[in-house]
Image (tube, rainbow, N blue to C red; front, side):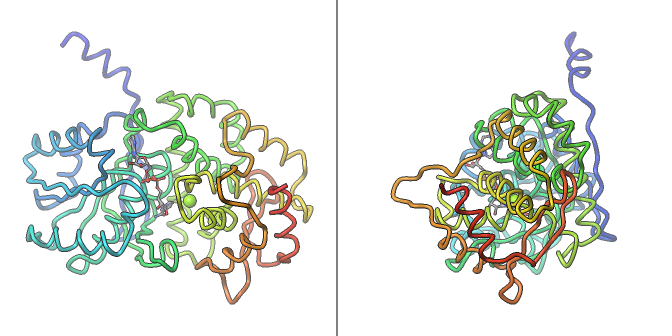
Length: 380
Ligand code: NAD
Ligand code: MG
């Protein structure tokens, strides 16, 4: 008991970021040790004390018990379904199986699904929530840096098809997001770096002073400093919440969040979404490619490009295409993946380019030759 006040003093205060979407508005809580009190927090937003948890095997092993204990303490009835880690679980097969498994528990329409996991669990659970009984409540408890700063916020949910990634889905907002920074302590360094690419994205696309902050504190974020991680997640989530509030369904400004993603998705598609290159790594490389494209058209200075590249080196982000056995990177192949992207508009490739660090714009005015030249620059 004696340690209590000290412990409390060591836990940084939590931050609340509101996503303003009228009657679909919700809070994102960013802080440490939130999972322990999840039950109390859920009581405040839910009418019914019966919930279904969806998680993956890795996260279940590490963190499910803490959540279940907290739910018990608040008197919730709960059932957990555990999927395999990896993109394979964002499939029609696991979606169908889970829908039936959950229906077998006879849930009421106003009960809640809880996504405890990274973006894969979050996207899958969100899509189940959007379609089960024509829409059930759902809460995101993102457990990766990437899902805390990106996928748990903004309501994009969905699964993959053999025809492509995220092709089946819905816009469906959660009731609450609990971004518990303490959960990142168990996340492998590679996944931290992948999430950090999305953090850096917010700085590059719209917030120069955040970029300067990352230059000073990026290594602390990587190394696990709690305060630094809370600040990085809070700032990222504020940026995303602000953009989503302006443009929920991506008809305008939300497209800026795709900085690095046209290139990144092509890289991911080329490795067939395998573990050789995870999403955040594709985004990291894709942002460098987008910067190279921006520099070639004279939009951004080479000094700015070098400044960002040196931040990549300082934080250990991927700067070169990885060598993958059995794969030869070809600019033409990557370009053809870009044309299959669901964001291609009447055959025009869309890119987000930088005019300066912290200032991005959307363009469809890019010649194929320029794109091929950028890709070749990275392949050589
Ligand atoms: P992920 O869900 O696969 O998690 C990465 C790995 O880390 C998994 O193996 C998982 O088991 C493990 N893990 C998760 N939390 C852990 C923890 N706390 N400790 C230890 N291990 C842990 O990957 P991700 O990067 O979180 O998400 C990628 C997915 O998110 C992709 O499918 C992508 O399409 C999607 N996404 C969606 C949006 C959106 O707006 N909906 C945005 C970006 C990405
Ligand atoms: Mg992304």
